[in-house]
Length: 424
RNA sequence: GGUGAGGUGGCUGAGCGGUCGAAAGCGGCGCUUUGCUAAAGCGUUGUACCUCAAAAGGGUACCGAGGGUUCGAAUCCCUCCCUCACCGCCA
View (tube, rainbow, N blue to C red):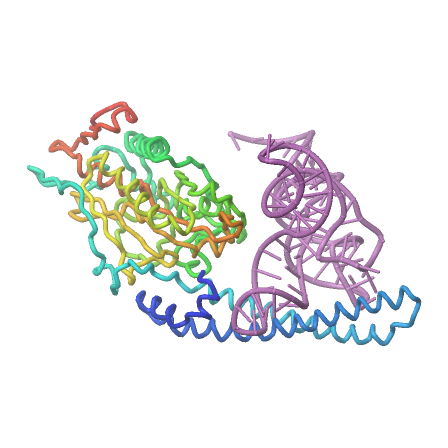
């Protein structure tokens, strides 16, 4: 959510920044400003009426204390009370309209973000390693996993439908080993605090991080009773942990790592990546979240991205890091790096991590603040990034380390976790 | 799921339906005293929003949330949320 004061004071700046995302956001800005003017007009009127009532009621109290008649004033206040009820209703409605409009407006891209129309304009900021070459035709993960008995696609679909997978045997062990490896890495080497948050959250939490209200249909699973939502990412519960709190500045930055399942409808992606485990409705992910001051957030984003990249470096997986241009930026993000790992069996890069600085966009929605050195309460900045998504890491890993005989020669960091060096 | 207790300012903790944004204590900040510290004394100390060109000033709201009663609600009534305790059930 953007600061309404910024919209009021620099509407042209906001319009210009939003325009770089593409689409018609200017008319939304106009609608918000009109609504804001109207809201303030009614609110000021209401406050005057309230002041009247307070004053008159006090007078009535004084008259009564002196046993003097007060019926006339009482009639007057009763009338004022009716006006107040009507105005209060109007203010509530105006507030709600304005809030809804603001909640549906995306974040401003950071000034450093390259301007571009879509994903084609995303610059590659660095590349690590090289795509491995094979003296045989590289097989894809579906082939490998099925042959080795690592994943049971058919039976998962039988019980849950398409888009669900079941890791089995060494496949399940490999995923568990990866989770353990990732958590240990981020806790022990990168200084994150491990958290194991709820997988079901209230609506407010989803609104706080920006999944709602805009993406209700496309993205999220809600429970029938409407009270709780299945998290699409650990970003939701973890970023919201300190919502509605004022943190001491000395506590920042706060660094969290969490392993959770993620549940996604993927309604907007029908027909894409339907086979295999590239795009599924439920997957595991190790997520990194930071709560910082505005002064350090962009530097923390660089570190967070580097922390995620370390995963791929340690596992010896070729990857590239791209920066999302303005047209490809997510709703809540001011700046995002995507990390894409090479999948030899696919012959393409797969997004395994998306590292974003949401600046104060989420913090304003969730009322997350810190007390600065001068004692003023200011909004925190929030960041998140995958460290990393499990299924796609799994894909890249087995496709990269496949041998001619279809076995998987695991990289050294996983040996202790999996207790074997080769999956065959 | 059942029963009971309770949710007040940074914390502890008062609060008869009117003068309560809220006593008192602690903590924080400032000043005085002091060579320094300690101690003491005095003062000050919430958030959001509206108004104002800005500051100053003025105003409104907020005592878990939302409704209701009333001329007037922290105070009375209802619903919900949450916390704590005990019981039941359960991984």
